[in-house]
Image (cartoon, rainbow, N blue to C red; front, side, top):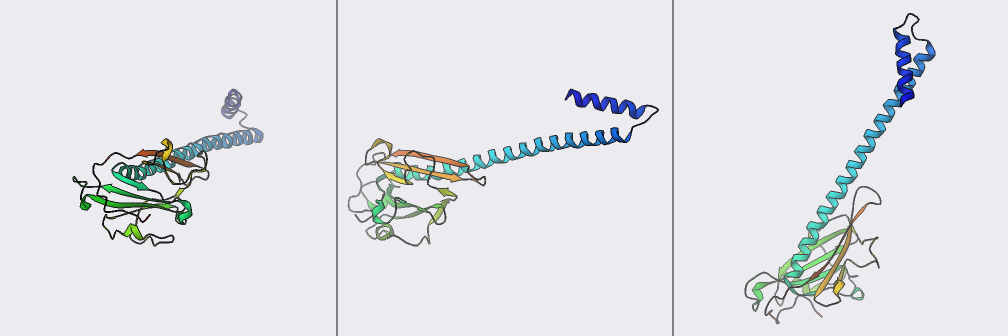
Amino acid sequence: MTWFRTILVTVRRRAHGDEGMSLVELIVYMVLTVLLGGLVATTFINGQHAQARAKSLADASNEGQLAVAQIEQSIRNGWPAKVPLADAGFGNNLLIVKTRVGDDGSVASSWNCQAFYYDSATKAIYRWTTPATVTSATLDLQPGFSLVGWKKIIGDVIEDPDAVGSPPIFRNGGDYGAYNTVAVNFAVTTNKPGTNVSISTSVYQRPQGDADANVSCWND
């Protein structure tokens, strides 16, 4: 920018001299001032965009972590968990967990049936909790069921386009290949096109003692 400062000094000297500023010098001065102002404005706007993008990514990451924490808690405290196969009509978008909530695992009142469902139409993951009884509502879930009564835990969700192998939202076995693990994979979109936050975890179920074998949360 040395050349710019040299021109400004020359113009200022002429401005304070007896001859004054010529029309050409005045035009040059105005053009350079506009260019400098444009450069400053562009730098400021780019900085604002970068800050907005960083905030959008941070918000999406926080929302994703909070949602997956709920799912992880249910799986770790549950026994067993089930992801109906895609050919059952749920497309690996449904996870059902029999979760322990009481001290005595041998009685039905110590267990809840918890279901998580990814609805591609609304791009959201929903949660449903119901007592683990012989008439548990999760027993009768059929493809195309109503989401009335379900709680949305996160929106702006898609299947992760950057994940290797295009894994479904929920998968039995997880990364360890064992039935008592569940893998969860999804991406949270932001208001910036092409910018997603990947969420991926493989959760191992902790032993919960003697489970009440007389109550199931799904129909095999």
